[in-house]
Length: 144
Image (cartoon, rainbow, N blue to C red):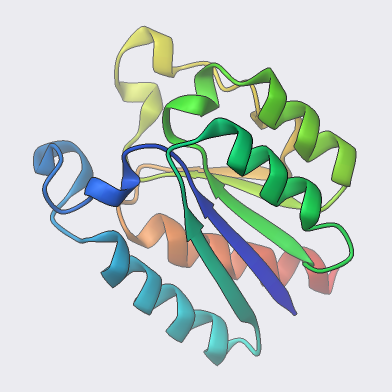
């Protein structure tokens, strides 16, 4: 099983960006934990980050036929990007939306996800563990 883990804008700053909200764990540390969890479940991971919306769209489009699941932390693009929503719908790969913080307990504008309707599920509010829970979800959704 191959899982594509995509990370959107500002996630490269994890560990130093608003640690009270996002924690002190860096994206590199999260990646190491994700790889370890995936390997334990017999899965391989391609882990990427970009601040560019179009790059995320391209990666999603290129995933068709190469990946069994996508784990997506679209960050701020969650609330604004019709392009990401359309790319997820177009490829038909089970996609799990994740967030480190509980977006529903934050500012009003973060309560609405444009991508949620085309994802198989959403994991939010568990910090770095959101990624590990998403690996479990990706493996189980493909076992069904």
